Length: 218
Ligand code: C5P
Image (tube, rainbow, N blue to C red):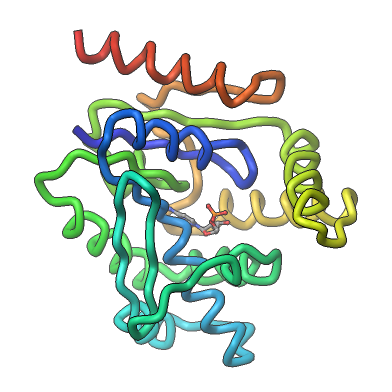
């Protein structure tokens, strides 16, 4: 069975998706990694305004390997890792995500990859456009201020420079761009279970997800 977990940046969706995949021992597909990988390769080439052609060419050079431990993305055989999680790469990823032909190809690639398999699929449009027929869908969200606080803490814990106001601004801009792209805008699926994590710990959210899963399977 495919379980989709969508939500905005820093909502806590990745933590829940990862834990759920481990619990169920099924592959975990982090769809944002593909957008990030292409964003990273573009930024390495100094491209700020990508087009479909260029993004599709880079996509064809990537390999995606989902497993219960996480999603691996390789470029020409080389594993891409922490370099994908910078704000600059996130910004370019959300630019790339506005390209319709590229999105369609990415989604097709994901469907092909998980054909006939069970998996936890995490992203922005897993329940709306990639797997609209998934039997169980979640939409994990939190206030922009709470999400900025979490990202801020994460960066400080990694010993990196962080400015709360700047992070909040970047999060709100990214939400805005994701929500307002003309094709495939970012929305919760109408049949998704919405969980607001603003005042919740990751553990509580996971319990809620597992409860829903039990209800759906019984
Ligand atoms: O989830 P993450 O923050 O890593 O995604 C980076 C960017 O990639 C998002 O801001 C969004 O613009 C884009 N994205 C998307 N659809 C997905 C996953 C990510 O548009 N399924």
